[in-house]
Image 1 (cartoon, rainbow, N blue to C red):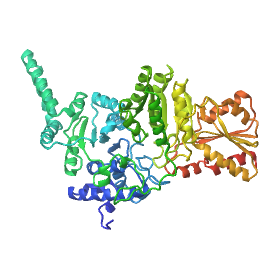
Image 2 (cartoon, rainbow, N blue to C red):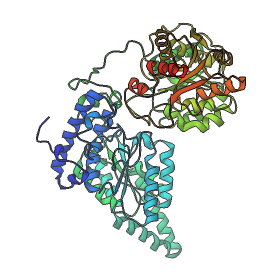
Image 3 (cartoon, one colour):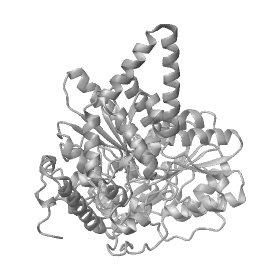
Length: 626
């Protein structure tokens, strides 16, 4: 990289204000080069961040952050924001252990307004900030950046409804990377949009309307005619804006999201309005980097790659991923049962459902970023005789707990929840770790919960859920499996029955899911120290294997191990059974503490938490006094 970069002189957004449009364009290119250079080593959300560079530079050059508030939806597009808000020198630590987060994090910088990571929440946060400003009587400006996909989420529409109703002055930058701009129509739309975005036009329009409506029957007729013509013309010429206009939000025409001059001029204009405004900006995902432009889906979230070609530089996995094993197993199940339907929420590739979508397109449903809709629709499908399998990341299914409880579990419907990315997910950090599902799944009446310990167990768990029926949750981790062959004819697992993997008399380790192989290794390490430890793959989180727990109580120590929060988790369920049995055996519950776990490679995080083999072995040895 050049030694005379403009980027090296940018320590805060205030430094952007002295730059010309031409210099900002040069800076945008330098930022793209830095993003590519860094993420080629660390991985990350490349395409989204490359597409939002000019939006971020324009916003920060106009706003006075951190007094003014710039809010990001999801936050995966905010790498340029990090580079110009004092984190340039730490950017090489992006998404790494003890490094800077891949998402905005208020504890990391005063320029990060809220800990984004999940979609569709930015407008609610912005509405709250705008309302707080109104209550305090201050004049800081509020701008939210939201993508077209996130705007489809129900929470975003709920916020739009409130913002329009209250007429809260804020700017919503709609980062639309799906639509293209037609030059002729776009020019007319831009002209009309800019007219609507001026206070003079808005005031004149409302004043004329009021004058006509106060002019008796004839005036009212003219007003109705003029209003109808105006609305019809707007629908014909600028149909994209109608839904926002009807909500009371002024909408600009689409503008080029890579034209810094136009972005700055438009943002300055709409910020001067005393009303909510949606600024429609069209961008290209992966802008400035050919491989990301060609394959934006892969570069949405990618591992380390070769800059020249975009090809992955990560070592090939020794075994297929749990995600791919699930996807293939579901295709096999669907071939045997035409009632099987797959549902996801904007994660067709991420949840391994592409093979299913190709094989059974009529039985595949992607609802977009709308987890509540996914689960609600699954309940209707089940009531209609289908067998829906809802594949969603553990962290995102949190948003649909109410639907799981009321729509699915209460009527005992045949719905399978496939919770991908359960447990620690690594470099995406606390907003993406799937560490709460054991709690929210096992608390629901009628819900049965399986935590398979390898890919063969996963195939059997899915088969079991579809055969037995009723509400089921199956959790499995991100990444490669254990290298265990997947059976062609999966078995039906007996409810509440575990399997013993290693016998022992001194202690019993009751392990769940991803922790099972580590528990086996811990027992081996303990054996080298003369400690005999039994290891049980519990399989079922609910119902628990009471007989296995009773047998465990005959040893000197019971230890439970899970990759989830301890509070309300599987281990606490085991303690409850021990209490019911009247067992007096000492017990230890290993899992995640009552705190958020930051980003880093999973093995490093497990080591810090005492959940690797060495940590488990140390806990057992210390408790036994050996």
